[in-house]
Figure 1 (cartoon, rainbow, N blue to C red):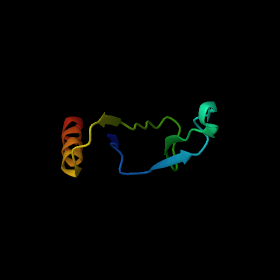
Figure 2 (cartoon, rainbow, N blue to C red; figure 1 turned 180 degrees about the vertical axis):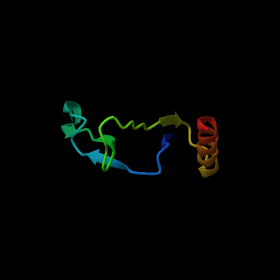
Figure 3 (cartoon, helix red, strand yellow; figure 1 turned 180 degrees about the horizontal axis):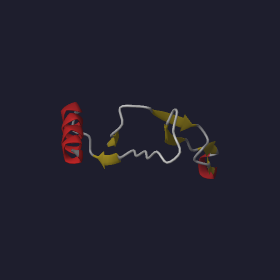
Figure 4 (tube, rainbow, N blue to C red; figure 1 turned 90 degrees about the vertical axis):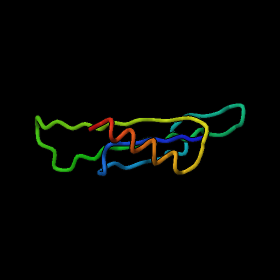
Amino acid sequence: MLWLLMLDQEGPVRLCMSPSGGGTCPERSTYNPAWDFQYIADQAQAGQEFRCRARLVYKPYQGRGEILDLYRTWKAHLS
């Protein structure tokens, strides 16, 4: 399966993973990881507006070419 997160930011976005942020899984006596991202706004000013657009795709994986096509199509849609 393909899990693809596309962000319209070239930076500064930081992807993070917490090994136990998703809580526990009692059936397996283990923790669930949690993925997140941080949008970093250095030197932000009061009243300044920021935005970060994202698209998540979850589908059967069909190769790298498909990923590039999905991204190009999404970026063209944003313009």
